[in-house]
Image (cartoon, rainbow, N blue to C red):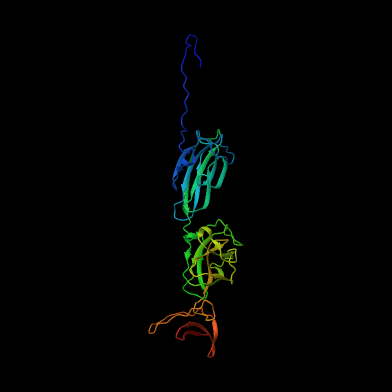
Length: 341
């Protein structure tokens, strides 16, 4: 403090602090972004909270933005952060960290960029919140524009929870299921030799009425392109699926896998390329009135004068009658449904 000669005297000096003028300086205060809308921002005067790339929390200037995928399906998120170091007031260098929610896992980083950033985050799950940390080292902070654009893949059975139900209208003989994994996302897990974590995967489910087995065969690319295609068979809730095929989840074509009546099974179909495919499956259910020598045998009780309909497609060979082998289902009153081979 100085005064000219003769002007010296006493004075009061007050020093006070002000709150940070940047409203989105903390993750909890992240500015919400809308798909397709450009937002102007600045990280000048912002403080640092986390270390990533060359950004050090004690000296970096960091601000936060959030976007939640509410498109109804998995989506690709295009991110653009534009700035011009030659423009007064613009940032001269920016680093971006993408987090899955505040304090969540790091999804991507784009470090020490000196020109417009254009990146795509693929297969962001429906409902997931992304946090974008826009940071600059001390002396490089400034203005920028940020835009996110969501493009949903519109694959309705991209997730296990949204598995497409397979109606079991035919039992004990193979029927064809058409599938399509175009634009589908990969999974967060792998199993056996199946590349669920890298290939596009779609989900199907079925619920057998009775105990029995299921067999798969003829996994075919409808377009005739040579691919590596595979199936996984799982049971239990999608949040903790359990392999039902040979302990690994990967299906071996032609192998019969045990299934339990009333249990929902999930089929994961994957291939190294997306496209239209098909596979054949055979649900062979065990009939309680099939084999009188079986410990669980229970004949159907008929009422006099009442019609009864049944299907012996899943019946096993029991004995010979007349000139042919007979598939038999047992009912009381000595009445049998028979089918001559």
